[in-house]
Length: 345
Image 1 (spheres, rainbow, N blue to C red):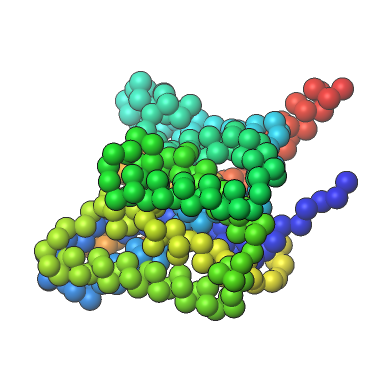
Image 2 (cartoon, helix red, strand yellow):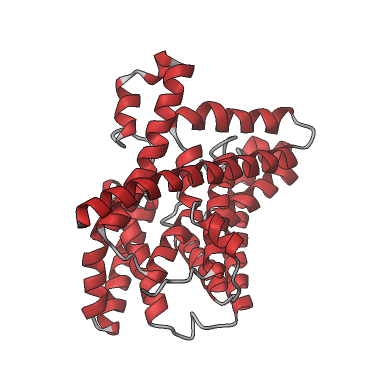
């Protein structure tokens, strides 16, 4: 049996993209999106926060693009492993908080959350849809011509840009890039870039990096310009939407930059195999509000060095989630060995 060796350059990108998610949730979402008043009173710190948001907003798109780059190999074992990982954290938090705060845990909404039936974990629900539909998408990719593939992508992103970003006419379908439909588009885009290299995707890696940084600069400059003229840009605004063309372009070229690096690291591969756990840990409904957002706010408003304090806390959460997930992997290996071995006999 041939074992697939993980490409450490792309695994490092997984690690970076999940770190970006933590930073995003600590910045505009955790503290608050800067207002015109913030810009007027504290222009330097506000611009710095704009830069951070612009550089990290690619996080979710990049994570999905990587899945498209390699292609999802659907099978029941992988689906079961993914569902077990989600349940491990959702049920685990419920059990812990049923002892810490029973009145908070034993509510209809929290019980529904164990099985993703409330508003928590939007990313994993969208990703599960993508995972389930991946055989259909792969069949399309395998049998369509390059021209038809390109036309499909062009038509999709024309619709996605107009109705999912510029207008609210199709908000239930695209939700600013936070739905399974948007993930399908990113998956197809990632596959197209991998299977059909062109002069736009085979440039020097430093050109890719410059395009990513250039998009971030444009986003930051736009945000600062609007704030300067008294226009409030909330975290839900179109500027930093996952459906924004600038955000998608930045995501693509950051991925292309990492794809052109070449190195192997067992340590990076080990960490990357648990990256999704970082999201499942810090975005859990029991944890996020009180133990992530509120702690970030306390650090930001009451620390002498808020950036250093925030980074230390973010890295601590990241590290804790990775090590907890290694326990999950041990449990799953034990369960799957007995379960699938018994089924196969």
